[in-house]
Image (cartoon, rainbow, N blue to C red):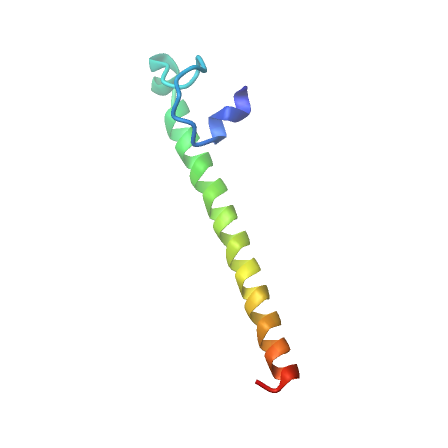
Length: 66
């Protein structure tokens, strides 16, 4: 329901998505800011996971003498 405001769903079945009055009150801008923050958090998590994986691969390679 309201959590759908933070998704990338493009359907306008929710009454608050695409509502001119809500958009004039700043809902669209707030939704875009929240979506950008969520995306930044996801990107940071992926980067941390990639760095951890690379570190573990390096340690494994060192143990195996590569």
